[in-house]
Image (cartoon, helix red, strand yellow):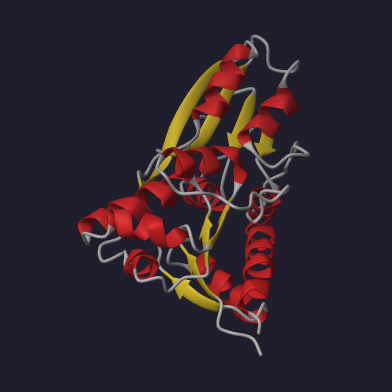
Length: 248
């Protein structure tokens, strides 16, 4: 007989949290939705004079489109298939998607093409330095436009209390910022150390090495990092790992 597998998910409180809940339901897990990211647009748009323009999220694409951005002759690059799909749905051509859906993958795909070229990076205010540092090291002239800021929603933190009480079997961290906001919410509720201890008894998954490094630096042991940086793979791996431990 199976026991309940309760999995905390921290995606923004829009269609992404709805999709996450649906996926976890389909896997037989009990979702514990606790959005740790809220989006505040800055009202800016990507520059139009770059040789290469890099978009790193579906949200960034939607905001660029809303601002009326036109890429002109720029080579448009998407960090992964989700971003590429959003670009195509908005009517933009996509010239490059790296094999590895990450900042490192994007730098690797562009290395050798961007020396001396102008590269526009349009993303959130919490984008990884791995991307911009890598582009600079490859000889590019890099400009970054902040399309939106990521903040912690008021009232977040139910998952931290559940972790502190030993009521989570899994947790899905999708960025370094979700880790930081989870811990901020836990501290706000006075359960930071208890929440970290509670996660030690759960299966903790992280998308990508930067997220894992952030979590482990803060004392959260990460059990799984999927080979592909996709939420679906993360969720499937965590639920599959957590479920056998809860069978009689």
